[in-house]
Image 1 (cartoon, rainbow, N blue to C red):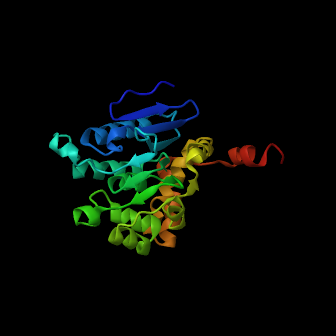
Image 2: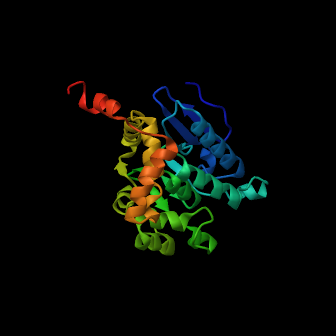
Image 3: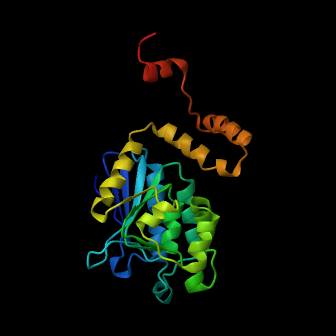
Amino acid sequence: MSPTPFETIHLEKRADGIALVTLDRPKRLNALSGPLLDELAAAVEEINDDPGIRVFLIRGTPRPDGRPCFSAGVDVQAFADGKGVTEEQGFALTNRIDDLLKPSIAVIDGICTTGGGEIALACDFRIVGRSAQISDWHLTKLGTGLGAWGASTRWARECGVTNAKEMLLTGRVIDGDEAFRIGFASAVFESEELEAGALEMASRIAGMNPDGVKLVLAHLDRIDDMSRDQALKWAQLSADWLDVKVGESELRGKVLGDAG
C-alpha cells in the first residue's frame, strides 16, 4: 500500500495488516519536535481508525552515515525555531499509544534516550538491537528525574523499581542485552536481523482474531492495579464491554473441529 504523506515521519500500511511508523529526522537523530509529535499523534489515530491495521511498529530512520538511531529525545533547538514540544503533547501521545487497543512494537537500535525512551516505553513491546544505546537523562540533563510524559512510572512498571532507580539516578547507557535482562526489551537481535525479528512478531499478532487481541489488551493493561478477584471480574466485564464472546457452536467449530 502507498504511504501516507507526512513531513517528519513516514506511515506505511502493509497489506498484511502491519503498519510501519518511522521517525524521519535523521540529521537531528530523529529528535522530537512539536510538528513530529503532532504527526505521530495523527498517525496513531489513523492506525486506530483503520480496521485493516492489526499491529504497528515504531522505528527510526538511520543517521545520514547509516548508523541506526531510534530517537535522541526532545529537540532543544526546535524551541528556538518556535517548534518545540509541549508537556501536554507528549503526555497525551504516550498515554494514547499505551491505551490503544492495537498492539504497538518499538523497534530500537542505536540511540534511544529520554523522550525517545518514553515513546518506546508506551508501546506494548520493545524489540532491540544488540548495539542499542538506551538511557534516560531526565535527571542528568534537566535536573528533574521523573519525566513529563510518564518516564519514571513506565520504567518502574516495565523494569521494576530498582532497575528504574538505577536508570534514572545514574544516567547509565545500556545495550540491547542489558535491556533484555532488565525487562525493557522482549527480544534482542543483531542489527541486521532486527527488522525481520520485529516483523515476525508483528505477523504472528496480525494473524490473530483482532477482537480477541483487543480483549487481551483491555484486560492485561489494567490488571497490575487490581487484586486477583478484581482482575477476574474485569476479565468478564471487559468481554462484555467489547462484546467479544465465543459461543459453544463457534468454539466447537474453531477448536474441536466438526467431530462430536
